[in-house]
Length: 127
Image (cartoon, rainbow, N blue to C red):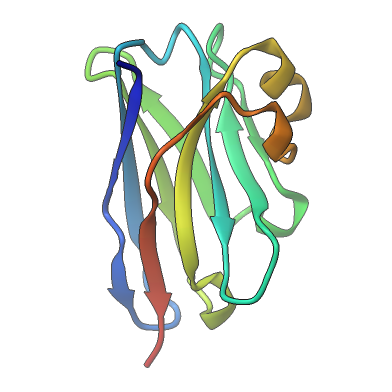
């Protein structure tokens, strides 16, 4: 059974940092492109970032470049999302996702191109 398991969410003050982790089960980070979406309360789901399965090229939503960094550890079969200088508007449920070439071609934004979704982890940025 193919699954994505996220961890690392929580409560952080504005300006703080968090690192999310996503570990696929049943496939490797070199099999599918892995990425992150987020959904804030009352808002549509938004593509955040993804990292290509073949060469590890990162892709970001333009609005998040410079604050968020995606990376992967192939040996640990894990993808990370380092989030710095967090703002209250970053508060959302963050979902780890994976997909094939169709998703890679749309990175980071097309939810319809995603094949697998994690259950999500809540990130709350508040003082």
